[in-house]
Image (cartoon, rainbow, N blue to C red):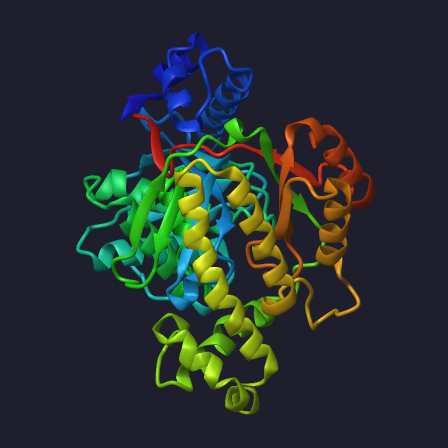
Amino acid sequence: MIALEQVELSLHTGKADERLCEVYGCMAGSPELPDYRNRLLHVLTGFRTQFGGAEEIELFSAPGRTELGGNHTDHQHGNVLAASVNLDIVACAAPNDSMIVRIQSEGYPLDEIDLTDLTPHPEETNKTAALIRGVAAAAHKLGHEIKGFDAYMTSNVLSGSGLSSSAAYETMIGVIINRFFCESKLTAIDIAKIGQYAENIYFGKPCGLMDQMASSVGGIVAIDFADQNEPTVRKIIYDLQASEHSLCIVDTGGDHAELTGDYAAIPREMSEVAAAFGKTVLREVDEAEFLKSIPSLRRQCGDRAVLRSMHFFAENRRAVAEKEALEKGNFEKFRQLVIASGRSSAMYLQNVYTGVNPEKQDMSVALALAESILDGRGAVRVHGGGFAGTIQAFVPNDMLSYFKTTMESVLGKDACHVLTIRPAGGVVLLA
């Protein structure tokens, strides 16, 4: 713990810059540093205004994530490639010597959670309160005594952007609880699992583990979910800037309402195919046996389930190949695999538009526009869950300004976000 005034001084004088560069992956004197400092000074002021002048506080950060490979493979115990990005949630927090968690997320109503009751509350489904209670409950199940704390947070991880603001939020709560009440004994993987538990059981969304893992671990990570209890996580050292391409996430402007059924149908249909072989997930199914059984599977499970399963088998191999390409510094190979991933998601996984509003095809328009602009250069693909969210593009630096301007002329101002990959996951920033 550190005095709030001391943190303010460190930020104003630049003494915290080395730590900020370490977390965000920037250089000393970087033009981004003033923005990072000012955001943290802002949350300090917000904390003081909301909760009064606590004698000692700590600062925390939890990043959004981008999926680089492995679209909808994690819930079938497959391989994924993901990375944390330079957009994050930052928080100022302190224990409050009670059993009440009070969190003020800037722009939202205050959340107050009574930790004497850690059971799921149906009225909290799809609300941040469910994530707070769920993370606390999961940590408690691991044998830790969880108590109350106050936190003021602000986020630039855009909601609905495909950068997984919910996983960043879960990671943030997990990192705070770990620091204050678990003696920092929880690993980044533990915190990711706790976040998934909260989202599945308390929040009510049947997500896989990739989002939480990428946010919690940080950097570029290759994750093999063959063993869900002990996934294999490998950090990949690769400097995207050396490729002379920029990572862009483009908001297609689609309507996210009523899409839970579309998202849930993908793991359900894949699991139905696995069940035809007496298995739980597709990772357990022999691909050769699957291919021989397609005629009966079409009758039993339907064509879409078969196509989505074909996507899984190919995408699972691609995620491994993408990891190997980056490890070898072969960006051209990686680029070709990204293109193949995008086409498979659109054609076979079919998560580019929703059955709720089939006439609305924002993602398909965005993909077509991006491909037209790039004209054989770079790469573009469906990003994250799909349906009405974002697309991902790797854009040659000499085309970046034109790409961004042209995409936004169709999709709206600030639709195209140019991101960098940050080396750190969920962390205590200053303590």
